[in-house]
Image (tube, rainbow, N blue to C red; front, side, top):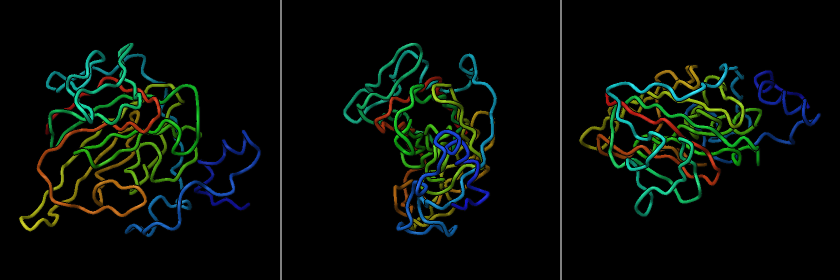
Amino acid sequence: MRIAPAMLSATATLIAVTGSLPAQSPGYTDTPKLPSGWHVHDSGRPHPRVVDPGPAPAKPAPVPADAIVLFDGKSLNAWRGRKGDAKWSIRDGYAEVNRTGDIQTKQEFGDCQLHVEWATPAEVKGDSQGRGNSGVFLFGRYEIQVLDSYENVTYADGQAAALYGQQPPLVNACRKPGEWQTYDILFRAPRFLDDGSVKSPARVTVIHNGIVVHDCQDYLGPSAHRNLPKYRKHGPKGPIRLQDHGNPVRFRNIWVREL
């Protein structure tokens, strides 16, 4: 099978381990097309090259004095679940997804700097989108994907740090399963005109494990699975949401600074 150069970094390890390639890269070719010309979750979209971000931090990063602490390793009081209190498991300074549903902040934010530390399970189970899947949503609708993308082939716009369904990261900076990773996110909320049309889109800069993976990247609209995004006018602020996708992903040291 002939492999395009851009696909080599995403498949080299798979060849080394199994001695063969999958019949087809995960993804779709029957979904709507994005302005880039690629289908949403296009199975043929080139995968970002892999970059080693260096060793995982030994302890959580310091919290700025003016930050609003959303999770300090002890309490989820700043969050709520679908039906009342957030019920994710808490132990050893982290909260773990436990199939009780998404959680979102009680407080709402607009333009902000968000810091999130996360880790996928050390024991690898599943593949593609079934491996360490979660997500960080600004305004509860603009997703930055969380996924175990270490030697795990999936569609490019669904890997770790992708603007889900829209834009892959510039590089794959994922650490090994079980190791702590960081997202530092600068988010600019969209602005709307009185008639509901978009004056300026949502825009994000994402630093994954110290590496810039999105630089002032526009969202085409709220994140969607197998569908095109479409803006609808909403308020100047919204909650931060963490996704329960059924995988026991861990989170710690979450804080935000309003801009």
